[in-house]
Length: 307
Image (cartoon, rainbow, N blue to C red; front, side, top):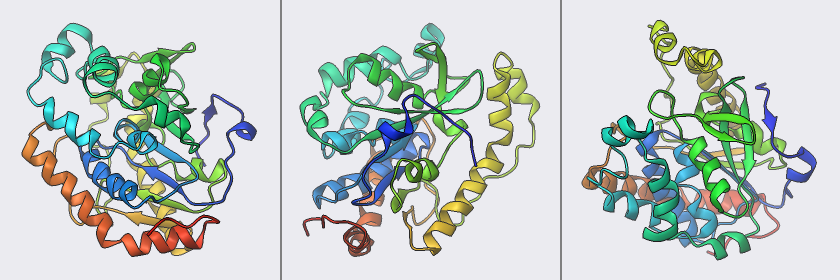
């Protein structure tokens, strides 16, 4: 089992097992598929004990707690072609391809405002996963208020090495959570959610191919040996997590929603038409399983969703 460093005690992080939890994979702009799924869940008032997001699953999935249907798709489409959002210019001038101040502070504070009041009233804990760049271990944080540092945790969860600088919080240098815990189902279980809905951004049966040129990671990330090790061993970690997830599904403890086919979209895709298509694929996938989702939640809850 993957070791991890928590930023709070497990006792204080534990959630009541009164309903299933929600786990959201990353994958860059493949995460727009997740937003389609999440919006359908919001439209049908499906309750969760907690939500855990990794990378894009953190950035886009956070809207489930603020209950803002359509927000993640909307701002990604509107930012198409905006060099202040994601661009080579931002990477060359700031070290971050995804502009840190614009994307994680200007946008949610002023341009497409995130609903902090609803977020804080919503009792569902929302966790993000980051990776400690110096140890290679996952770090988990409960995002409580969406103040400046809270959003820095979200940024850290999605800060890919090479195209992002580590985010420094509390003496730690943090990078993308997918490096160390791509599918944090075990974390959701450890904080008390025995049953979980997991949203994947790869189709069923997918397995990550082995790394064929590990030297490239040493060349590009040599300043962070632990990150190099994570990148080199990520296929093994990810595939083992998929096997565990599938075993939990066979045991009736996990329900999966996955794309019906490979999404064939780049991590930094900003073509509005492609994003719209991806979003509707997510909606269709969730609607196709909606009765199953509602039954799963009702079976493992003391509070049934409103049909």
